[in-house]
Amino acid sequence: MGLLNINGPKNLMPWNREPNRVPPWTIQNVTIPSINNPAPDQSNTAAILHEDATPAAIHNVQQNQAIFPYNRACHIAVFAKPINRNWLLLWGNNATSAGTVAAYFDVQNGLIGVTLNILGATISAPLPNGWYRCWMSFLCGITSAVSVRFYVASASGVATFNGLNQDSLYIWNPSAGEGYDPDDSDKIYTTETPIT
Image (cartoon, rainbow, N blue to C red; front, side, top):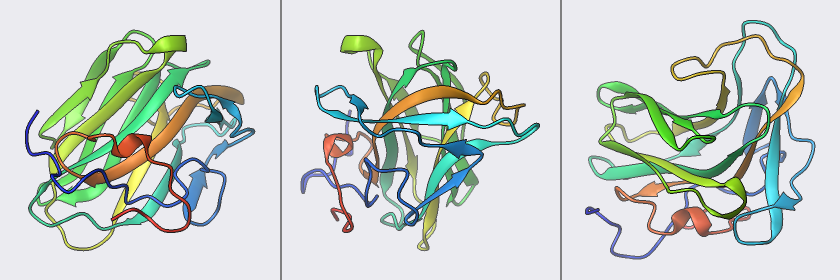
């Protein structure tokens, strides 16, 4: 570990357990049929990402207002579980001086796939009931808002695919914040105000 946020966990994403709430979320070629599914903490607060049937498309949820501390190690994290897809992509659009940061995670087999412009990526050992905790860290290189995205992927390195109109992944507690490690920020429930 290292480069932790010494002031305690924070989460820059409002309404992190409600990706069906628009705004602050934007939804692309997915629906959120339910946010009341069994989660890693035994609550019924996990969301389903349901890909639609759009061909040759991306399928994601995102927020566009996360302002990370400049020139500091930061992270994007989420808990995820497979339904009919097992690949998840975490994405921070133009988050570094080198451009976009990204990491693919196989949440069926506990593997890390293709990565781009990051300091590191981690997937936990399997958690109860088939969940994995996934995160990537990066050196923030801009002072404006970053688009933080959570994609359904069809394979490592493949975020554009023909949708099959199916439940794809469960996600729980998306988070973004300072620090190489989420340091429990991905266990915080936020409402309209991010925890900064």
